[in-house]
Length: 200
Image (cartoon, rainbow, N blue to C red; front, side, top):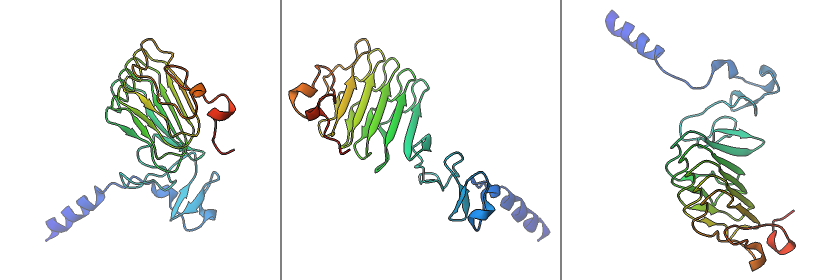
């Protein structure tokens, strides 16, 4: 019986809680460094408190995001070959996707549910899969060699800028919103009144 009790104590001590007990609170007065008490946790933009995997953390940052500052989800794909599946931006918030690792973001980027999107395909072979923008403003830079090989769809965006400046970038011309003046050939521009229909 004593052995079973000892085993139970050891197993209980092995439980992992990703949230630090130092951030528990009952009211905002219990928090420091400008954090506020939300759902029993001291939270702030600078130190998010992680929740269960696959959900948002206590600071409201979706698990797919590397960080959330100022309400913007940043997804960092800065190592070679990472983010090989489609990178899907969370819904109803701005999204920044940085693909600056060799062959990163191989499955492409789906930003169709974000309120606005900035995607940087800066290294060789990045963003090989399709890039899909949503109804908000979309800014895609394909500056890496052979970047953005899967095409860019920003036909439904209120404004779209696509820069295909990388050597061999944009195998397929981007699908641009608005009149023909918004189409630069391989890419798109939001310069000019008809090309920027985003609410101010």
